[in-house]
Length: 357
Image (tube, rainbow, N blue to C red; front, side, top):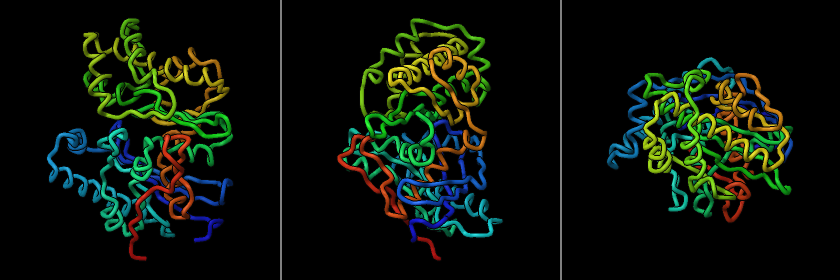
């Protein structure tokens, strides 16, 4: 494959906030460090209530049912890709799928995403790249975040790139290296408590805005051990359930007050990183970019410029970058940075399932 040619790749993203499956058809052109991109078509397939319940139950399933769901999700992804590409005149080079994270414990040597890549390839009849994290974890890295190389090569005009999804994570250049890490839980926490009040999410942060700020909970959250760590760090569902959630639940606060305090905690932690690293601007994408109360709170804590892009970029930047990671993988170019993950070396991550051409 010529490294300077133009190719289309489909990116698939299923995040911890359980909104649904993001599908983006992306076009890439360039080589080495000079790339351009276009998002040609994108949509989100919302998960049904049954699918959400199955995904939430994943960590507690026996081995057979776990692999059954692994196959079912891959089949669902593959069929949705087939429908999505039905009217596309030129067949994409590949599908690049993040999968859906179930376990993330790199300190124990594993990070697990379901949504079988072989099944995606079979049902979409398209070469599929998946399992992007395992090689980095085997190289003693965090296996996360993976987006920063895309931030650097596709969005390098910004001082920093912040994704506010289920987890808020950031990437930026420091001392001539790209660094990145998870900052805190974001929509994963906000959606959890919005659902207790009967809604999938708190639109525009309206409920949070009605709540009262609780300084005790704010301080307790900010003093959790994770926020004292420096360098490459990542968080997952396990820490959310075992420590973060427990800290909130023992406060016995009303949902609106919890949401209000969480918004301040999230914006405070993000601003802390931005201000400490003298980052003069930040590009914000992910569902949290639509939360006007959260963005207003962040602007109160942060002294720099907040950039909110167009809706397509907000909603599909992660799917775009996973498409880009797949593009790099098929070109046998580095797509995982050790400066970000703490691994022993950079790597070319991703398993490839070739479809019939």
